[in-house]
Amino acid sequence: MNVQLKRKIAFALSMGVVTTGIISFALLALNMGFSDGFALTWLRSWGIGYVIVIPAILLVGPRLQAQVERWVH
Image (cartoon, rainbow, N blue to C red; front, side, top):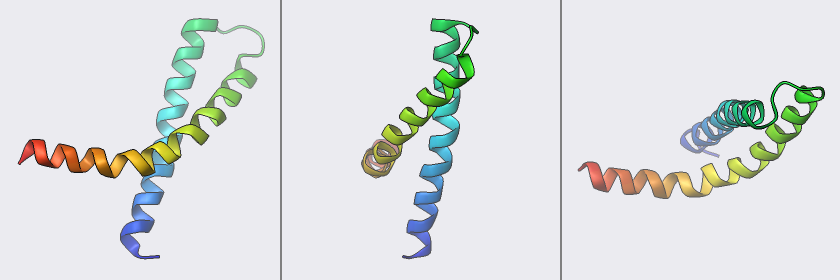
C-alpha cells in the first residue's frame, strides 16, 4: 500500500471519529436531552454512525473532491 493511500485512509478514519462523535452527541442531546442512559445511547449511536460514514468518506470523498476541483479551476 502506498503512502498516499495510507494517508487517505488515516484521514477518513480520523475525520469519521471526529465528525460522527460531534454530530451524534449534538443531535442526541437536542432530541433526547441529558437523561439517564445518555452516554450509552450516544456511544451506540456514535458507533453506528462511524460504521456508516467511513465507507461513505472513502467512496464519495474522492468523487466529491474531483467535483470541487472542477468547480474551483
